[in-house]
Image (cartoon, rainbow, N blue to C red; front, side, top):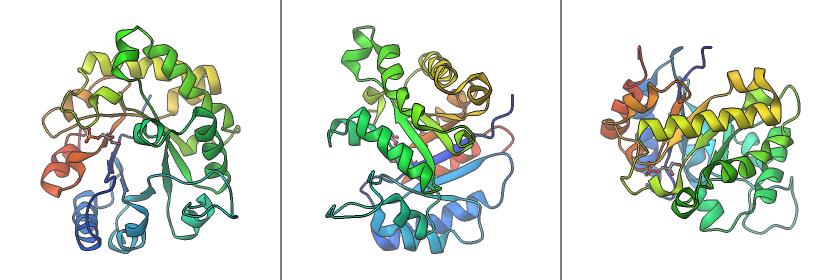
Length: 253
Ligand code: 13P
């Protein structure tokens, strides 16, 4: 089964307009137009338009870090997925662990966001992952199964616009990257959950990215696992010196 690997940079609440634009140009030139890997960047909302202009001519996809679950209305401070689409955004990250655990987003809210984002013709990258106490209590698969229920919102025919990012919370920003074996075990379970929700054909095709302390030194080994189809990178996506080696870690890149 060939699944085109995806290397994605989640810039979180970092960078200035000028730095984000420059980084976009550097990534666009490192990526060029490729068939053996895809590249996504997720700047903060206020930098989206600048980054979009600086990605021109490359096949890097433009992503937003979040959206609201309503099309329009009195929701001060929120952003509709339709507004993102209108601005030229391709993909939206939903259910990131910082949204779940710092901002208190529930599985039900995230599922509603998945539904509306797909309706707005965006791609969705759904993030899932367990906390350390959940792993230690042997609850990892249960947590993943609960979070993956958001896939019930994906109508037949729309599954090719969805990817999953497995990001164990204990590995995010800590330097405590999952071993390739732990990543593979969780990814295989995520794939089983995709099959349970959307069927085996969809499960065989859907990319599952690993996220959590990915660097140029550990990316190749993680990517060599059979169910690891890419990386969602935080800290190491903020400079081209750190991000380019991760892009290059895709086999045949
Ligand atoms: P780090 O790569 O900084 O651990 O962040 C991972 C992440 O949360 C990407 O979404």
